[in-house]
Image (cartoon, rainbow, N blue to C red; front, side, top):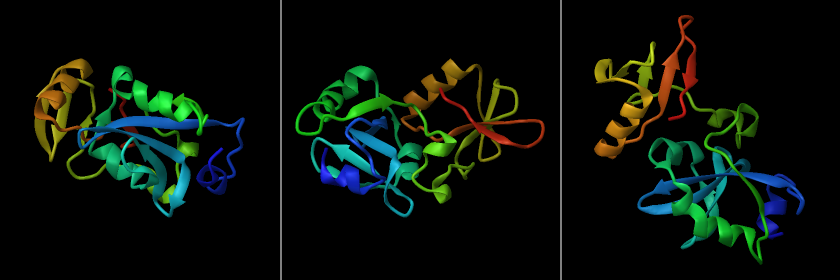
Length: 162
């Protein structure tokens, strides 16, 4: 196990590590949201650049999830020698899996919100009308993937996975 992994969070060789694969600036990046690099930053890995700290929340807000065929090579690299990571691919961070409590996502300006899963708003204006699949198609067409939130009748925000 590489020294960076054991020095960040006490990860053992037998531990399963959560990883998120994202398309970031045209490349696949592996984010390890449960492994803090520095306050507010998680560990990351790319083919070029290798290991380093990353603004996990910032990258998630400005990227899209990588498809399995897009991240397959990077996943193989991380599961092979010299790394031999035991990875669990996740699509979003669990509340207990944040690098720091301050890094928990919340609704920000530019995010998309809905109260009925049919009408989707951005900047207080109607952005799209339709279901979640249609919304994702529009976001892909626009090449813009902000966080998407369901706002309950109690005003609580819940992150939507598309």
